[in-house]
Figure 1: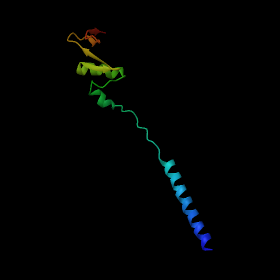
Figure 2 (figure 1 turned 135 degrees about the horizontal axis):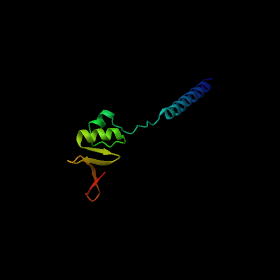
Figure 3 (figure 1 turned 90 degrees about the horizontal axis):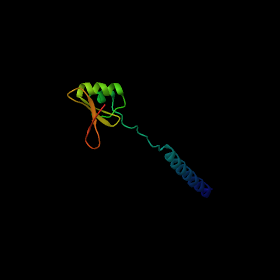
Figure 4 (figure 1 turned 30 degrees about the horizontal axis):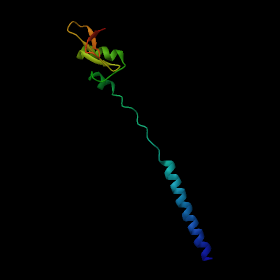
Length: 94
């Protein structure tokens, strides 16, 4: 009788151990963090943050005389003409 109880005890311990390991693996989930997108106010006050918003780009050009739009920095000249610098360093007017 004691042998049967002892075997039953070990079987229960084994099942509990196996079940707890299985639940730990299924509960571990990777968190996918979203890419950082600056808030609109932060973009509005920082012309060095690239934007795809045309209206925000125009607002920053008027306010700071420069703005990054789709990865390219645009400037406003003293004659109020908009330009960007080419790879060679030449001004390209729009």
